[in-house]
Image (cartoon, rainbow, N blue to C red):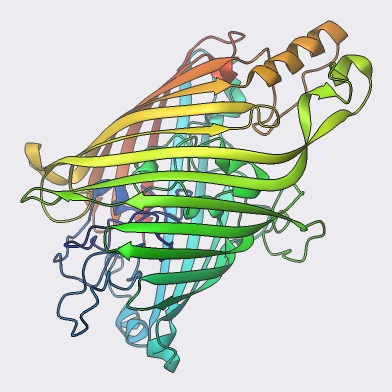
Length: 501
């Protein structure tokens, strides 16, 4: 399911409980999901391609189980990073290259993700599209390589192709393919490049550099089990606002995560806000952009409990972000009237706020691993409706591994998502009709009518084909495409192929 598994340490994205570390393929979320805008990779959906013992040194993103066998009296939540996908590579150990690199603290991963989808009913037209991505991830343990204790660097680049079929059939709110666009016409688009240092038995973690904000905050590895990009990687609307962008854009900034206990954390970030459509330019490498004077400050509280003898792990997150930039009001001019009708500039609004609440809870365990079982998940995100076209996004779903029907490496999932567009953007669009001018575009793209709300229903089944390889048939029903009644409801059939090389 997702392409890569970057990383690591994405502080707290998906921490495991004190008594259990995630397995290497149960990623924690965050870049590590390469392909998936933030998720784990080929086995993310398969919930572990080859499961490793629970006492393995951690899993992909955050591992937070107690370090067993450590002499210190301070309980250690484990280092945050281990090889993405562990030793799970389609080509094995690359003829002995992988073990040689790992002995020197160098974790190198490449992956391929292809997604084909088409609407069989509804929309403004019947359309289909193939979109895909090749990703490369490099994570270096500098303690092994050069003796710098508890210091890592992480880097992820991608090359993408294709366009999302949703735009072709008239929806830009909840694109049905997670891989597409925003990667630039370049061989290697920079997604992330940052350093990470931990202190006090890994209870304090500092990361700094080029970081997709949404890969740390409001993130979950379960999201990219699903193909729809409104949830994959990081939920909308935050991922589309300049101060909290996610994959494949990174903001220059830093994240501090403190763990008062081994099953709780407090995380805060400080990020430069780019006024440009693409952070780092279309290629991601133009880091010296002008206009980076404003900042975004996300904060998140997390709790990772475990219940019962089966260690039924849960993840509960509450977050808030504030961006101190100035943004144009979607409807009002300086006098409070419609700027489209008055001809005056839209008034500027200081600051942008967003809130989120996320949870997932394992109900039945099928085996080892933080995602190996029946898991229920739900969440909500709210943004300022005056400056962001989407006000609210709520979702609920489940994932289940296939042990019950003799396919333990397969995964079944279902989700429903509901989106409310802001009343302010509806007023803007109504005024455009009165003024006889085209609908202004917004953070999501083209607008075809007065927007109000929409729903997306998704069902998938991920089939484990072989080592580090998955094939996932996917069905989505898009009710009220683009949050209007201009086009009929769209039924979309898709399939996703992922392999970690």
